[in-house]
Image 1: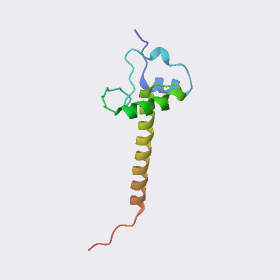
Image 2 (image 1 turned 60 degrees about the vertical axis):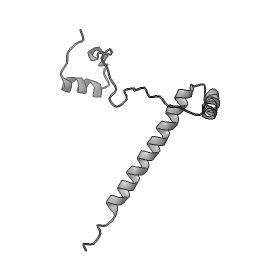
Image 3 (image 1 turned 90 degrees about the vertical axis):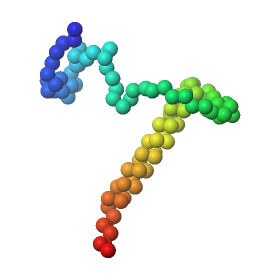
Image 4 (image 1 turned 30 degrees about the vertical axis):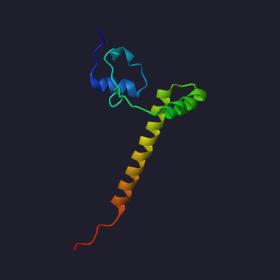
Amino acid sequence: MKAKIKAKDFDAQFDKGEDVSRYLDRVKARRPAQEQKRVNVDFPLWMIHALDREARPLGVTRQSVIKMWLGEKLTNASAKVDLRSARRSRLPAAPPR
């Protein structure tokens, strides 16, 4: 059984840089929004070969290249949306009609 501690005491120890691992149950640990879900995607053969050529010099799998590229694309797309939202929020309101 793991040692028990109040959340505020845990936070205080963590903030001080103390080891709080004795309070954590690693078997039940989760990473919110990082959980995996398997999906199947069909690619044309030429794309599979191209992915393998990209992965080989990096020393990673085809799947890793796909995850890396999709992650970059989604991060960039999200940043663009955030930028557009920020620009819109700074625009003066349209005059009433």
